[in-house]
Length: 354
Image (cartoon, rainbow, N blue to C red; front, side, top):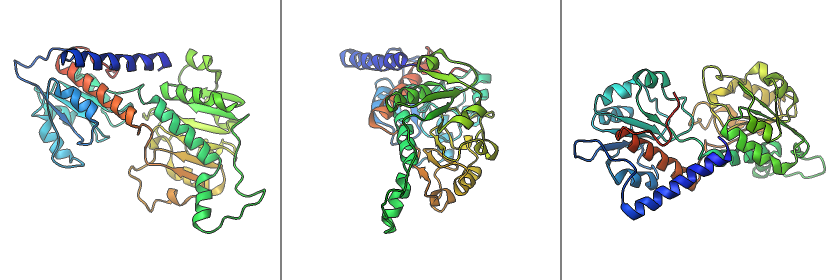
C-alpha cells in the first residue's frame, strides 16, 4: 500500500472520531431485531480505542482466562454476533461451525493472515476483516533498527560488556556499512515499500527487490526488480517482507543462504517460518552470512534455551514490529469498524480480499 492510502485511512479514522463526538453514532445501523449485538474480543488486553468503538453499538464480552483457551473461545463463539480475533490462534472452520447462524462477522487485528483458513472463509463467503497499512511504519522502523543492530554487532558488543571482554582497538567488533551498500527486499508490498522509503536517508548504493510482478511504486522509489537468486547474490542487506504462504514457507533455506555474501545481513520482520531456522543457525555459526536481525521466529514464544539465542551474531526481538501505542490503537479501531460493518451487513472498512 502507498503512503497516500495510509494517510487516507488515518484521515478517515479522525473523521470517525469527530462523528462519534458529535452524534455518538457508528456509520452503520445494526440489524439485530431491536437488541444490541454481542461481540467477543478474544484478548482482554485489546486497546480501549477499539473496545470503545464496539461499545457504542454492542455489548462486549471477553474470555474469562488470559490468555484465553481455545475451548472457551469456541464456546463463546456461538453466543455472539461478531468476533474481534486478537492473536494468532488458528482461525478456521471450527470457529465458524461453533459460531453457527448467529455469528455474522470476524475481524483479525493483524495484517498477516497465515493463521487463518482463508479457503474456508472464501467457501462460506463469510465476512472477514483485517488491519493492513496502519502497521507499515512501525514494522519498517523495527526492520531498520534490526538492520543497524545486526550489521553493527550491537548484541555481540553488549555480550562483550557483560562478560568483561571489552577489548577496544582499531580492529575490534567491526561491522558492515550501510552507505553505498546494495539492499534487497523480498516482497515489495506496503511494508517493503515503507522500508524502501526509510532507506533513502542512508545513501545506499542500489535497491533491489523480488516478487511476483513488477510494481510502479517500487520503481518510483528507485528499486530494481531482479530474480530472487540475483538479489541474494548481490545484496549486502536482505529484508524479508512477504506473507507466509505455502510458496514462501522456508523460502530462505540452506540452499538460498549459501547464495548470499559472507558479509550479508538478513532481516526478517515477516513470519518465522519463511526462514528455515535450523539452516539459519548453521549459516550464522559457520560464517555463511555475517548476521541476522529477527523480529519473528519459530516457534513463538521462543524457548529461552533455543540455540538461536546463544549466537552473538543474531539480534532477536520478540515480535515487536507493530508494538507502538498509536499503531495498536489504530489496528484495534479498524478491527472494530470491520466487525460493526459486518454485523450490519454493510461493506467492511478493511475487508480481506479473498
